Image (cartoon, rainbow, N blue to C red; front, side):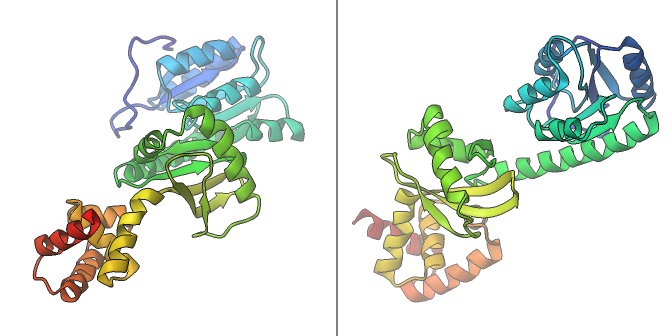
Length: 312
């Protein structure tokens, strides 16, 4: 069993890299049994005897999954899980509770504080391994999806039922910084505005104009996956004024003006497609129409017209 290490692991799982499992239990017998079962499956096992030790290990050596006893001294499993989910660097790690408790209230409490599953002791190794594989696979799919979104240039983020940001692309963080939306403002004002708006049941595509900032921002609802997680898009209203100006002065449609705006800003067709969430082929179709309307033959000439309009 490995309880310590000197360096953090890679966040990207490779097929030839063993899964790292943190097992947290105050029973040496339980730890030994689970350790043997997991190591027999080729997994790397970290162990902790109580919650505070588990948090320290998790921050030093980020595990792929955590098996957590609910009843422990010093810091119990429920509070440990709550602390894990409050740390952005650890919040996406799936947590499976292990306990002798079978009361419904304890099951609900474990799930409400962020657990993804719940096993009652005595643990059956076969059942434990089967459930772990499911949650490890789900975690990898989620990680892959977030990595893909991070690379698209989209200002997307998710919030919980309280309006607090759970995850955001780097572009979202950059736009919030540009708008001088401080961390405290995000935690208080932004969360309050989102909580009130989402409480009225907006539909996908509906938009909320944020207040309390010098830089004009709005929020567009993309999807509400569950009552606990909502996918949103942060919209820079000041930047959106550029496409609107092209639309009004050049007689273009809204989509055509957006395509031309990004082409004028030096974006390739593929980059413009990613920003506008459309296919490169659709961008090409819009450009063909734009060339006809502007009576030009190429991107350079169209971009030149757009830049002159924007400068005015």
